[in-house]
Image 1: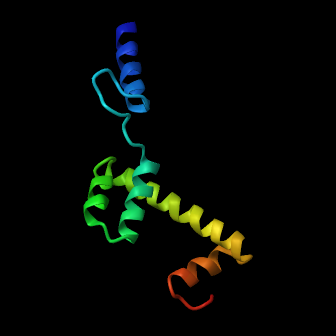
Image 2: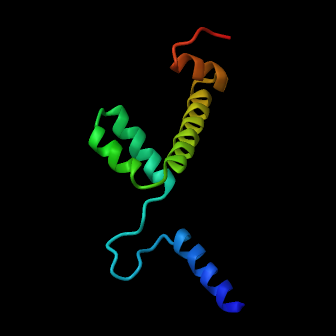
Image 3: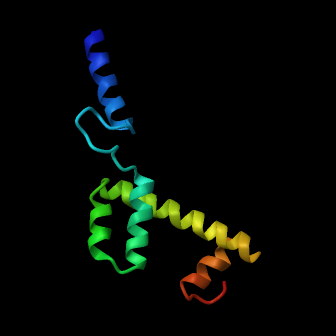
Length: 98
């Protein structure tokens, strides 16, 4: 029974690991690194780099990371501009004020 717990715990630790395993060159990318690289590549029209970043994590994780980045960016811009996040988001998308 304890062997199964150790085996399951080892798999969880492998998923959460940020340092490289022996023989690996670098640590794996996390979803926020993938999202930041993906969005940056898209803004620079670098399709190759965007595809590379998209391969670092699952599509669901990338989607979550891009969503989190968008939320944080809108909040930061809203604070900087002294406006509501909704007003900033609508402005960025070219939508009329609500």
